[in-house]
Amino acid sequence: MTMVDDRNTSIALPGDPAFEAATQVFNLFAPARPAAAVTAHTIDQIRAAIRYAESEGLPVRVHATGHASAAVRPMHGAVLIRTRMSGGVDIDAQRRVARIPAGTRWGEVVEAAAAHGLAAPHGSSPTVGAVGYLLRGGLSFYGRKVGLAVNSVRAIELVTADGELRRVNASSDPELFWALRGGGGGFGVVTAVEIDLFPAAQVITGAAFWPAVHAERLLSAWRRWTLDAPREVTTSLRVMNLPPLPQIPPALAAGPVVSVDGAVLSATGDSADARRHAEDLLGPLRSVADPVLDTWQLTTTSAVLQAHMDPTDPIPVVGDHMLLGELGDDGAAAFLRVVGEGSGSPLVVAGLRQLGGAYSTPSPAGGALDHLDAHYSYAGSGAAFDPDTAEALKSHCAKVRTALGPWDTGRTTPSFVESFEQPQRHLSPERVRIADRVRARVDPSGRFRDDIAPNATALP
Image (cartoon, rainbow, N blue to C red):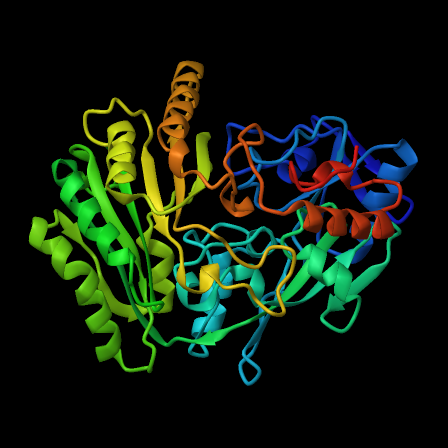
């Protein structure tokens, strides 16, 4: 069934194909089940959905690609707006700026920027929505050089609860601009963002894989390298238990493997500089053992989206995330005991993403979240195709959390949070107070209150 607003905007109800389209999520383990939904391509459609929610006394929720569906509050009894704003990515090459409509995926942004020899601080998957990723922090393989992705945002366009279309930046409602950048959401429906780009015609990127029997020596070498690694390099180390699927190379599905992937920027624009950094990273790792697959190479920036091998089709996922301090030998051993070969781990992927560098540097013009005080981001997940597997994954995630507890900073990165139920915190109490003050100003009735990330508000 479909309800039609007074301006001919269709509000879809359960059972309608338009409802199914608007409620699609990437993480099939956490389906969206609102009371009504609309896919919005225009500002008027967003306004109509807000009016409908107000007339029915319902809260409003917002999503784009649904990658974070497990990390947000349940949507029961809400009106869901799926943003698919019309218009493509607009690149101003002279100013090194991209305007990105809400609903745009990173693959489109990366390709548009690459045509001008520019790059964006994108995520590891081409299918993730750019806007949600940016406003929830964003960890890029360029991050140790350019910082959290949210720091690249220079302007935001949104429709607030009163139906007003606002454009905010450092000089126009700077308080709202500050809160939107990592403040936990619940401010309205973001329709577009503008971000700074940076020059990067070529990078060295890829992934190398070794049998997990070498995990201890590989982790030791990689961890030592991370202690004083150059900012131009951002990497991750993962233990992977990949299933035998057609899209996975047989060498990687034959048993557990350890992967090191990432990207190397050149500080001078000279590829020789980047090659030296790459060799400093990969040389000691390759000396441990020959990789069973090694794709590291000098290539275009578009290839960075393929290095991490993130799935491109929707899948049911259960996982967990923590920000960790420096592990030391004891922390590294604890990590491998719970995710390494012989641990009995059901996780398909469990890894450490290298932080530090610009990630740890507060941005003078940054928003509510502008840096991370941690050495590594831990993320572990598996495919929950049946209830028994889902329970096994949840149980093992709890086991990993306990094992890594001594190194847990107690903070998280919103764009990496895997579950609404997991402990999560990314703002100080003072920053939560400021964000709540802004929310009370732009949404006094609390229409978007359920869209606020857990622990990002002190409101009842």
